[in-house]
Amino acid sequence: MTKIRESARGQYCQVRIPGHCSGNPETTVLAHLNGAGIGLKHPDIFAAWCCEGCHDLIDGRVQSKNYSREQVKLMFYDGMIRTQAKLLELGLIKIS
Image 1 (cartoon, rainbow, N blue to C red):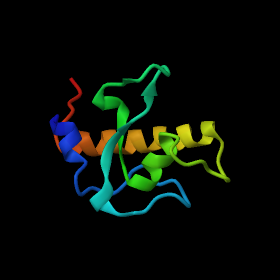
Image 2: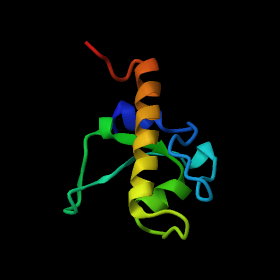
Image 3: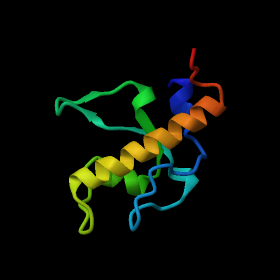
Image 4: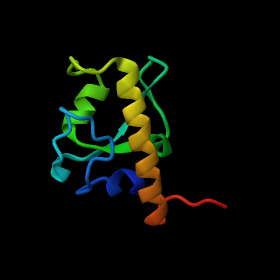
């Protein structure tokens, strides 16, 4: 497990999809968007700290009555940016 993946443990969800986010840091993992529909995951830099409720929606295990697939993706991207800021603060990513 990479340090970036390990960093998700115990953190608050950064995706925060209203009506789906559990707010429970015990369930947070580093969630990736699926890559190109062929089962490939993007690198860890393109992921977000995500609770089980948001992760289920992002991965399509549950459907939303309130949000389109595109809206869910946008909320994921917002969470990814918030996660990248936290990773930068923790020194797990660097800008040179």
